[in-house]
Image (cartoon, rainbow over all chains, first blue to last red; front, side):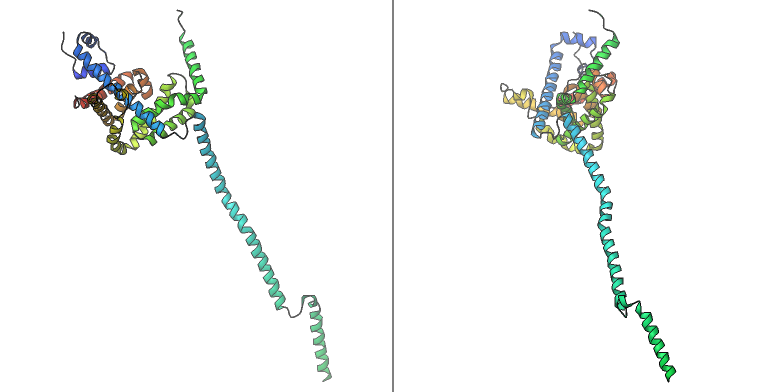
Length: 151
Length: 192
């Protein structure tokens, strides 16, 4: 029997690099077969542990979206939310403009009203009599001059 | 047996894959556990693994029109998962190392022969220590070696499928696997 397989040769064999020489040796050598078998068993235990752990973790926290349609729904929902947010952002200036417009109109109305009030307050005579004012002043002027002439 | 023309075979496999992709719900149900397991074992963080798994299927859904059936659907999906894990690992390297020790303790406590009631407490302890050593060793491997190691020894994929999933040549996969096994065996040597 040839020498035992080296650790590197065992790793190569396990990695899929199976040379004829190594295979021949394994047929004859129970020690090397045992070494590989123990390594395979440990790796198998590791696989079982990872699978068990993964199963446990998966079950402990149910995934929010498990089905493909759900994945897509989540994706579509995300886009719908983004679209809604954009619409809301776009609507803010319009809302503000609409909100400020009545104020503007009312402030314009107020200004006009105040002007009217000022105007009416500053009037010496009521508006309906305004047309007569020039005549009255002219009349009074004419009367005054007549008085002066009499003097 | 009559020889089957290559074009016939390719058309048939493409049709089969296309059908599998059409029923995306079934595809997710079928492959979700493997993708989650691989991402979980790679990043060792449940929340990150969930996110990566979900991202993987969203990517698959978006890219399904480009799938030409050159590999099995599972291999194609695992390739997406491998890429996502690689990107994640590059961004979160530091956090990964911090988690390794804690998770090594959790993972060694369950699964396989450890659940077998016929083995003695001493054997159970020995197995547990070995599993913990493999877990710790796999955590210290470079990213590509770890990916290849997990695909081979956790997902039980053959070398050609691993090559397709990682985008590496079969020879390169063997080299990464060899180096990973050397590291794992060195670590196991401490527990003989």
